[in-house]
Amino acid sequence: MSDLDLIKERLRQFASERDWEKFHTAKNLAMALSGEAGELVSEFQWLTPEEGQNLSPEQLKDVEMEIADVAIYLVRLADILGIDILEAVMEKISINEGRFKPNS
Amino acid sequence: MSDLDLIKERLRQFASERDWEKFHTAKNLAMALSGEAGELVSEFQWLTPEEGQNLSPEQLKDVEMEIADVAIYLVRLADILGIDILEAVMEKISINEGRFKPNS
Amino acid sequence: MSDLDLIKERLRQFASERDWEKFHTAKNLAMALSGEAGELVSEFQWLTPEEGQNLSPEQLKDVEMEIADVAIYLVRLADILGIDILEAVMEKISINEGRFKPNS
Amino acid sequence: MSDLDLIKERLRQFASERDWEKFHTAKNLAMALSGEAGELVSEFQWLTPEEGQNLSPEQLKDVEMEIADVAIYLVRLADILGIDILEAVMEKISINEGRFKPNS
View 1 (cartoon, rainbow over the protein chains, first blue to last red):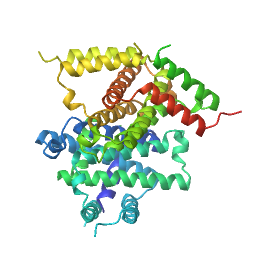
View 2 (view 1 turned 90 degrees about the vertical axis):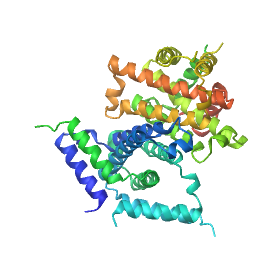
View 3 (view 1 turned 180 degrees about the horizontal axis):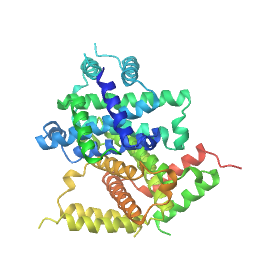
View 4 (view 1 turned 180 degrees about the vertical axis):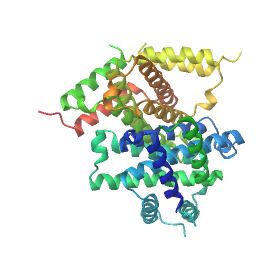
């Protein structure tokens, strides 16, 4: 099973065991993702670009857990809507490749 | 290769071909992710929860492309910081399982 | 009339004339504000801190309009909930003054 | 002095007394605002639209303090960039009035 499917399955089970499916509408999950993205960005807000590249182990752990939170809601939202993230990303990268030509 | 690694490799190549690595600091990527999360949430802002569950094909495509954008910056940020998303997610779900007990 | 009240009154009229009050729930307005904050942050995402301090007239105008969008949803959300922004800010600054002592 | 100027002046003093001006670049303040918008949206993420309209006193207080945080960074960002929020909002509302015609 692929990484993304593995996460998807585990999140389905997690929600099901807690009877949380009723909260997991697309609208609510998009909000939750946005909230977690806000927590992620706040980890870096007072850091210089250089400090952001050289996080302490504690900072890195905090950022890792925020990245996990964003990933969790992203996978869950895609699942609810029947969207395949890998396919979506590959399509979007192809579009971007057409828009932004490589340096020669 | 796992799907998250596949995305990671393709994004490395995309950035390298355009000489964009210099823009891809952790601070900047966290901002870009937050901006895309804002675009994603704005897709749902005036929809009722029910409408959000029953998107038109056009709306669904827009949401799919926004999900792709968030995923792209999430994978790229994790890559820059040496974070393994699958590991991070599994650790965070374990933590959440301890915090929120399943219904009996 | 204070400037915040002036904005509030004009937004009430704007929503009323378009029959948009039904869309302006607190949940939806919080989402809209978050979406606009994402647009604002995206104006700065690839700029160095120095470039962000020295915007071109075009960039500054774009940022000004994004700041306006955030302000619009902030004032509208506070209005819907009966929150006085000036009072709220003054209370929050007092809290912060207690938390973060000035340098001597 | 207008509400917005009052807030602006108090925030200038607050930053100055703590020697925080160096952190208050436009880029950093936009990030901080985005982070606070994330906290604000997260207050509503699991609420139904109806619940969001009928907050408990505790919820309302939390939302009020999040609104204050967004307002603080918004006013501070505008100040750093020399943007007049009232002017910006009035211009943006005029633009929106042209774009979205009132119901007859």
